[in-house]
Image 1 (cartoon, rainbow, N blue to C red):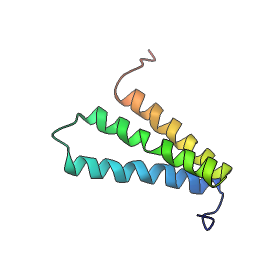
Image 2: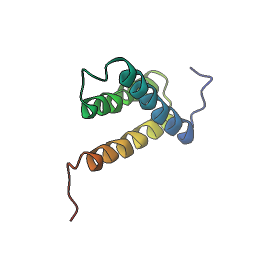
Image 3: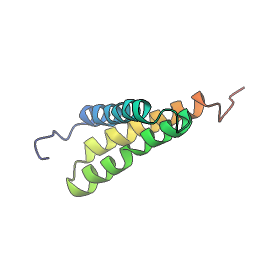
Length: 88
């Protein structure tokens, strides 16, 4: 894991590609069992073990910040997509 650069942009890439992979995996296998919002939450939660691994085990702070940033962005998109907050 020392081959991965400690870079914010790399963290954003890793933090955005992993939920997409999990989404397609879950959408293909268990689409009829779970609701779409549940699949979205599972995809959001996949970033947290990655965040912990990169921050604690490998001490990649910038990479962890990128994963955390994209997690916040994806969470905001989830909230707005499912009408959990109304601005007006």
